[in-house]
Length: 132
Image (cartoon, rainbow, N blue to C red):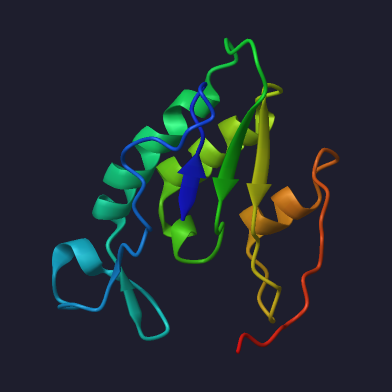
């Protein structure tokens, strides 16, 4: 999910939960990438997410802005334009990013590890909890 606040501190109109992972026809050309039982529709993901992130790439903003990215994980990393956009947002000094990274379980994701080891990133380990 990507929630980005605009200059007025409001979430843009296109505030949709990014459940752009589809469990549809795996033979569909748009659904070639799989993560476990899920099939990832990269085209739909990019059409929704990239326009939301684009304003946060600009360094022309006068005030600090916040961009929330939940999550930068295996499904999202199938999109090279997404990883590029995340890099630009992270490099922008006028943007504070609040994001989530997956816990490493075995095979590391190079882009996630690159973010994890950035000097300007502060990591918080959030333990498991139970919602009742």
